[in-house]
Image (cartoon, rainbow over all chains, first blue to last red; front, side, top):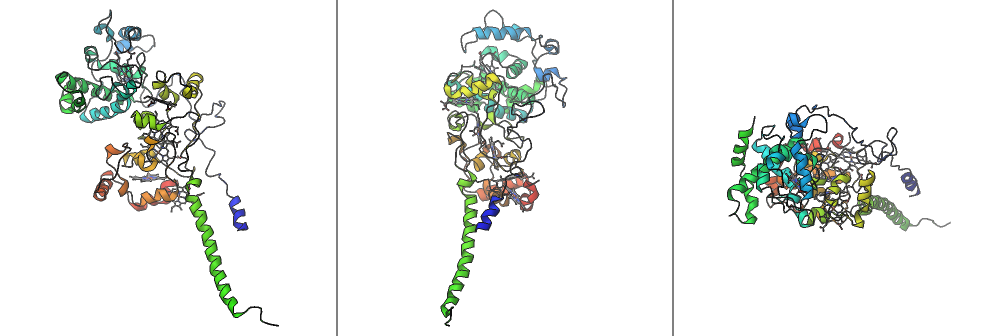
Length: 237
Length: 219
């Protein structure tokens, strides 16, 4: 007994906790910084190696002339739109002085990548993960978090957003919009476009039968991908 | 001088030899059981956390998908713990003055990470990968239990090697279709035996020899 206890006392946990960086393990120091993180934040201005982000339309949703490479060159419409919405009553978002045409100026109007049925399915899945908590499964702005007190977003089925160009949606996901947080770190650019294709499908599906379908059936209507992809396909390059 | 050892001592010595063997076996068995007990593996013990984060509220009642917070679970080895920004997506507005959330706001103000206490922690000589399991039909609740009912997160599996191997030897009973991976209340259908075999072929899961080879997990 004593012998085995002595042996047990020899057990050490060295190999259980090796001195290496693994995700989320706090560390004393990395190089010269000691904020406890082994995963370093990106240095400002870092450019991903896989794609030099040359495809401005794909990565910003803005037309080349408008996007510019200097941060000042935000599409004129977007800034006004944001300021104006912030000044509005929560959830209303009516148009004041500037028309949708002005607000949506400078954004890409066609998908910068081909959208297939598989993309649409992926879009639906991602939409349900990231957007439906606030915007609701059918995009009506009645998600669970809204019921718990978050500001109610506008419905996707109002005229203004039905006319909004796809690039505008991309910009909202990437940079946020007033009280809506941005999703740039949670959703890859490709998935953002897929989500938008799904929002388009939602809008089409709801437009046809908007008034005469009971609310609890709206979810079923969100799945007519054949028809919707056909429409979307026309925009493909 | 009379005999010290009477005839009966033969019997006693036999007994004590057996007894000794049994005693040693008992001790070993106790140690092994202790090793598997939830006291040692820390299963079912909620950890003290800097924020009283509740999966029951977020994933259960509010229906937030696991991937909203654990974004990398489908693509990486590591499931990921959400950064403070993810909490602020919602808590910049709701419960924005609750004292429970003060550590979150402080982290947001100062840029210092919240120091979550690890619940699951495999030894560093074991290689584990979420993405392969999640993409090959093993759902969260198979390994983590009903997270969506936990006010404080705890571990339900022992995470012993025995536990991993039990499934790697025979994964069929646990395999689900793709769309059920994140369903917390999934239960095997009555025809799971055929289903599991079919899914195993569909997912192209390698043979038991490969799955139980030491270098699969110790690399």
